[in-house]
Length: 176
Image 1 (cartoon, one colour):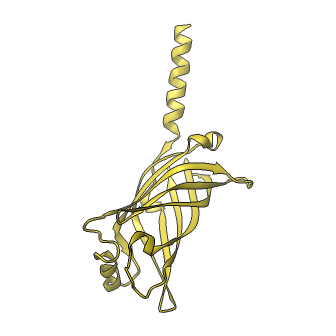
Image 2 (cartoon, one colour):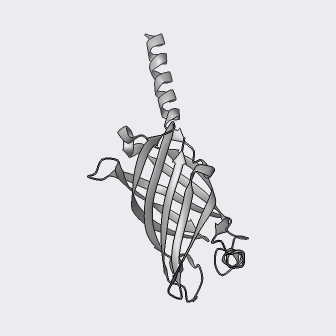
Image 3 (cartoon, helix red, strand yellow):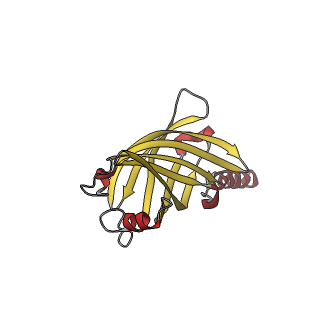
């Protein structure tokens, strides 16, 4: 009986660990777009890291804790990128990471689509966000895709700059 109980406990421990996955930075993209003087400016971030607990059969136990390197901002314009790293925008000297921590994940009425709720922290300002995402099994892990909008002023990014307040964010994060 004890041997059987030990095997069951080991099985639960192994299955719980197998659901813990990590984002792979070079297979992940975090893109953004914002209007500046009516012109769409796009860019990206790298340095994706963190932990993800995800099993579609146990979605109530899902958890996302993801960070990215604020210094990695890239708009294909080095002068603009340096400006974005400065104090009035991302202030990477004091806030080197952008972080998202989930608070819950709930299924949608579409197969393979869930709603992710959590707290986004940029430049020391934390805001609740939610968005739909897909999770596709791939290469021994999952490819997570989603998109959402944020207001840069909610995070004290850019002050009274003439750029649009609303920013589109799209993500494609591979984790295994």
